[in-house]
Amino acid sequence: MINEYVEIVEYYDNLLTSGYFDYDDLANTLYKLLGDKRKVLDIGVGTGLLTEKMLPLADYDIVGVDFSSGMLDIAKERLANSNVKLICQDILEFETEEKFEAIVSTGGAITIVEEDQQYKLYSHITDRTKNEQLLVQLYNLLDDNGLFTLKIQGSHTNYKKEIKDGIFYEQKLEKGKPFVDKWYIFSTADGQVLKEQFCHYYCWDGEEASQAFSDAGFKGEPHVFDDEFLVFYK
Ligand SMILES: C[S@@+](CC[C@H](N)C(=O)[O-])C[C@H]1O[C@@H](n2cnc3c(N)ncnc32)[C@H](O)[C@@H]1O
Image (tube, rainbow, N blue to C red; front, side, top):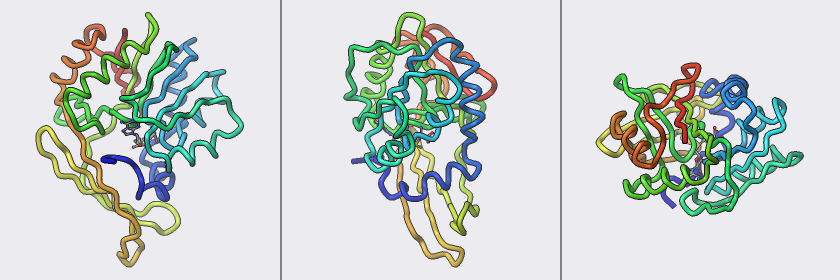
């Protein structure tokens, strides 16, 4: 399936915990942002790195959805002794009677990238109409005072760096409109490629993204919280 995380699974945690994201910091920021909200949906929960850091902070009731079974297998192991509900499903197909007080995404199914002085929306869902449907679906999954918060990532650029265990990580971008292609490449010090993963994103510029959230029902302008999260309110 397009944008399913398969090749990257083995090296994902190494990459993400080698300075890509700081999950302690993200969890603490979310703790402040969420206040007394406890019922949380994570769209694209991945290997559960964020959830693991959130759980000690409050008695969260977290549902994590992800369509990459390899990523979710790691999350299941990581969160084995918790009451987190992990569901292997395309978020577009996720249905429930439950309502959530917050929906979070840290680079999940859709994410925010601060680029060209705008908050662009990068989506793993490559069809415009389906993205619009997703925003409506997420709006409807929130309770009346619910919020949807997305991690703000820095501009996606080309670079190569060493991560842990002598592994090198390289990312390459090709930016078009509306699609952005990204290659994740893992190699050894002598350049032998170990794994390569390709992602094809649908990208909305800042104004289009704001309009799409507003068309889905979210209130006015989003709020930037601690320079780290963009927050949309129901
Ligand atoms: C970059 S990873 C982020 C994972 C996690 N949020 C984290 O902070 O490490 C993106 C995740 O989104 C998931 N994803 C992408 N599109 C999805 C979709 N349509 N439905 C469910 N999961 C999706 C991928 O499988 C992958 O695990």
